[in-house]
Length: 118
Image (cartoon, rainbow, N blue to C red):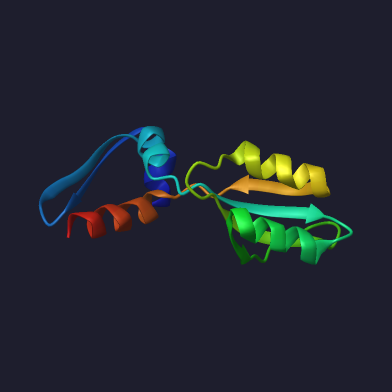
């Protein structure tokens, strides 16, 4: 599916001879976005910051490289929360070193679409 993303702007996904999804790849990715972020923050109070994040977001440990050791988390927004809410909280409690939205790739989207149609 990687080559599909590199070559195509418009896709159609077929499962068992049924067209289950079609459109511009960017539009489809927006539709399937999970509002999930990889976050790295340098803070003097990592336990407190993580606990407060857990009160407002779905938080899991993450493993990625940072130049400085810091709090590394996988954060999913809850209903009504925005990326700006998360970023605002992080910047008020430390230095943000990493903030990346996890965008689903075409393979992930295909699997989700097939499961939704089953």
